[in-house]
Length: 326
Image 1: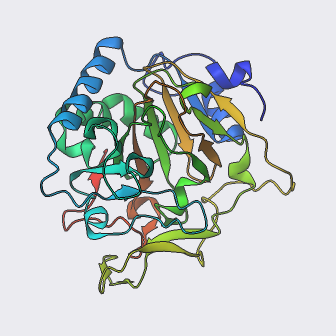
Image 2: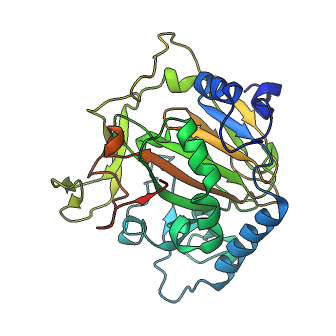
């Protein structure tokens, strides 16, 4: 793993205007991610952290199915796929860390320090998170990236809890939110400083041009109707081979075959990180005594922009569809 290069830390400077500069777009196109410091002012960060901690303190365990979020690593590990998870696209729900339980299934710590993430509709149901998500600044960024009909989905508060915050292996966001052709972009806001100690992100620069979307995370057993909505009984989730487009439209594929090297992305609270749907990225387990709160949501291109959202994807829209940024 290579240390963070100066250009990878600053990408030319923070977001001084709503639109991305040509220098920032060049970095994005070459590397598949972009780090923008100081996008959120300290008072906004404080408001979001306060909202997050209040939700963690106030949610009830009485009717909670105790759903754990798993990244699917290990011989016996499986990705989460129960009804509580599959119907969370338009709700605020709470998913536990795997290591927050003992062998008998009992919580080993207070519930507020046992949650892996809160999702997946903070961008519409939580006023503080909605304000920063559906903002004029993000509209300008989306236009800079070429979106014609940006649709917002899968918003999450990821806690990366002290000592138990799980490792996330190398992955590509478009595997989970697949459009044909791929179009996903992650907006990732640091609400606390993220460094090597508490599990910051790492990226394989340029891998969005070398790593096709070979597999997709879907509802197993579901089929799609003419409106792109999943049918049949929900029977969990898993990965299948991707038979559709593997790169975004217009992306020039890098023919070089190489072993990916990861660049560490340490950032300060208030930083926005943009993540290309094809770029390989990961984070290590948080073994420190500090949490690593972040807020993230994703944009996908709509049908007006020439992309179709698949009816077998794990997250499906309601009858009203996904929230539109513009």
